[in-house]
Amino acid sequence: MSLNLKVVVLGGGGLIGTRVVSALQAAGAQVIAASRRTGVNILTGEGLETALTGADVVIDTSDVPSFDPSSLASFFGDAAKHVYQAERAAGVRHHICLSIVGVDRVRGNPYFDAKLGQEDLVRASGVPYTIARATQFFEFMPTLATGFTKGLITHLPNAQFQPIAADDVAKALASIALNDPHHGAVTIAGKEHAPFESWFARLFTATRDPRRAIADVEATYFGGPLQDDSIIAAHPDYTGHLGFDDWILTESAQHALNHDRHADAVSEIKRSTTA
Image (cartoon, rainbow, N blue to C red):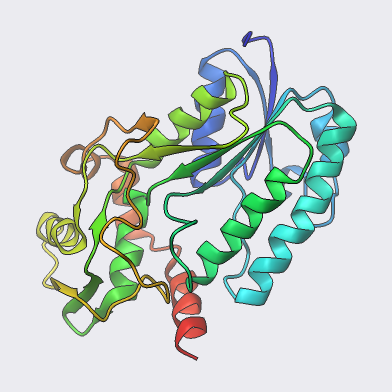
């Protein structure tokens, strides 16, 4: 695909969105970072028609304002109604939806359930599409640790974990945007996988955190029981370049460690799965 294209990034002010915008600008694309801060509200449709005028590609990296299960379902449904209508009217040629590896294999996690529903809406939209399923981000590990910790013990699922840097996810999404739609799902994953407790032991050692990571056969992934390979990609289409030892030294890692901005979301998911 020619680089003479216009790309709209929904959620363009977020963790992944800002990075996708930068990657596409570096590639020479015309990019609009669409978010409520820039006057685009996918829940109401406000600003969408203007933002999508002349757009070739839309990348949806938007995230939910609430992790309550009913709010999750309504968010993706309401957003889909406005986004796909605007895309069809604008003649958008490629919609890219950021999703999660394992979303089709894990049931009982409210966020995964809602993202799987979002994927169904993408397929039914009538817009050429690619669903980009990524493994969990390094940047979310501090928050996940909080969600699994009781006292000084972090009780983790007895399964494999394959984290990836947000920068690598963004680069993969930019690459997908510069190519034709897949009309299906592709996977983006970290360069190595290992048991959950191994990854979090590395995190705690690197940050001199006194907590101890253990595998717990009773631990679910926020309500979703895991098999050993439920949330890893054995043969990813896009593999991250940054390993943990390099990531932990980055500014992104320090921000994640010092600003646990998803802690409230994790607490909300825990409440919804234990109520």
